[in-house]
Structure formats: structure tokens, C-alpha cells
Image (tube, rainbow, N blue to C red; front, side, top):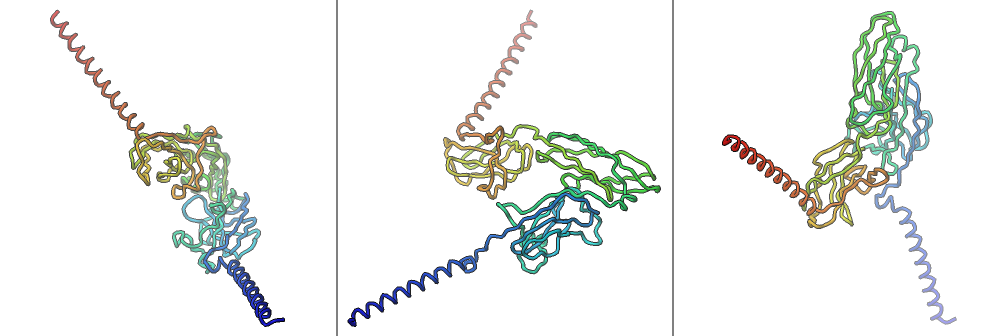
Length: 390
């Protein structure tokens, strides 16, 4: 074999070795990309929170799984949690007990929500509320917190001997979202002593009203709660009446009081103003054929007048635009869903020129009405003058 052939073979082998090394290095880098570039791996969690009976001091989570560890937080629809679990390590946990502080009044009754939170600080101490949501955020699935809801009623028979008991609970099975409904509960004092206790009324677990009730031994009395449903979301709502250690629940189907609608009442190149009837939390979006041009602020269920949408870019007066209702967060419009009625999106198509022309027609109509009134007045004056001359 010649020297030239030997050198060529060595070069080829060296090139192959270098190529293999490059491929292996690339594989290692790709495999470690999330760690190298600071990309978090997807966090996963799940939870099962079943209806149960309790004494108001703790609840049981049937099963919770956390890919990176964290906490289970119990809330009743208010802004603050009412109970937080101890730190839970990564993995699956069954029959997890979450309790209130020892010196707190028993309050784990009604419809409660259990949400799975991360331990982003890594100190195994819950810090979501004290950091205004910056730390220990909830695990998410499809963009929503991982949570489950359950109804908790009392089973403490010993406590019931001293607590007022709920003999009956009457509420309408159906109502609309713009009326005042009456809830009537009959409360009995099962003891032989004159006693004063608090009766609480809750909607979906959140305390809406409390009444102090004083009953003689063995006495029963009706307690009435008047509930204004304006602003409540349509659908099935759970109403509950609670004494110290007793509770009763009833579901009411709320129907939105009018058809969802959006109406453009004013528009120019920079702003669009609408009147809205929206059945759930959402917003109004103004779009052209290509993209969303602007959104309103967050709107709660109900009717809203003069909702303004500031356009992110100027438009021509003859551009065809659409104002539509969406369910979701106006800060994340791409994740929102169009609100539908009778299987059709709730929206209206318009141009700024058409809106302006409509306003001009209305003004012209008012002017015509004024002219007609003036003509009628002049005719009346002439008729009166003729009568006087006769």
C-alpha cells in the first residue's frame, strides 16, 4: 500500500470520528435544551375532591397528583383561602386531609373548591397570597387552574344537640338573572335553653348574608333571605343555609334574562362604543377580516351600556368591522371563545360610515319631529285667532 493511500484512509477515518462526535454532542445538547436555555418542563397535576360530610374543621381530598410537589388550597368562592394543606411532595397522594387552624371557627361547609398549587419558591411554605400571586401559582391544564369542587355537609351528631337545626329549606327551582328571589328556611333550637346563634346564607359556597337568630328552647322560626340575582352567571347555582353545625343545600337553575346581544352605538377611527348583554364573564372584541383590533375591559354577566373598545390601529370609515362577544380574558383574546346564541356567534358587522349615517338619520328625525311640533303650534295659534275674530 502506498503512502498516499495510507494518509487518505487515515483522513477518512478521522473525518468519520469527528462527525460521530458532533452528532453525539448535538444529541446531548438537544436532550439538555430545557435545562440549558431555562425552558421549564411541562408541569402536570390532577385532583379528585368528592362530596362529603364533615365537622367543619377539615375535608378530605380523595386523590391528588403533583409532578413537582406543592399544596392543595381550599376556597369557598371568596378572595382568600380558608384552608391550605401541608407541603405535598411530587407523586400521587390519597386521602389527603386539609384542615383549618385550631383557633378558627368551623367553616368548611357548603360548596368548596380545591386547587393544586406549585411550590415555586422551593421552601415548602405556601406563599401565593402573601406575594400577590407571584409565587406558588396554581398548576394549569389547558390554561386553567387544576381544581375540583365538592359539597360538604355536616355529620357531627353531637354538635347538632347544641346547634340550631334546619327543619326545611324552600327556594324556587328556577329563576332569571335579573330578579329578587325569596329563600325561606325553618330553623329549630333543639335544646332546652334560650340560645342565640348565627344563620348564614351562601351562594356556591360564598357567604352572602348572615342573620343573628335568638330562639327559646324547642322553638322553631322561619328565616327569610332575599337574593338579587342580577349579575349572577346563568346555569345551575347552589344555594345553602347553615347554622353552627348544620346545613342544607338546594340547586337553582338561573336563566339569562335576555338574549345575548351587542349593538354599536358610536364609532370613529379610534374608538367603538357598544351596548352589551353578555351571559358570562367576557368582553367585546372589534375585528376586521384579519385580526382583533381592540377589546373592551372585562365584563361580568348582565347588561352594560356604553362599553368602549379602543382600537389599536386606525381604520377607514368604510372598512367592514365586526363587534362580537367573547368568553374569557380580554388580556388573552386568542384563548377566548366566541359566545353563541342559537348556535350562532353573537356579533354585529358595521362600518364607521354606517354608524355615523345612522346617527345623522336619528338627528334628522328629531329635527322633523321638532318642525312638526312647531307647525302644530302655529296651526293652533291661527285657529285660536280665527275663533277670536268670529
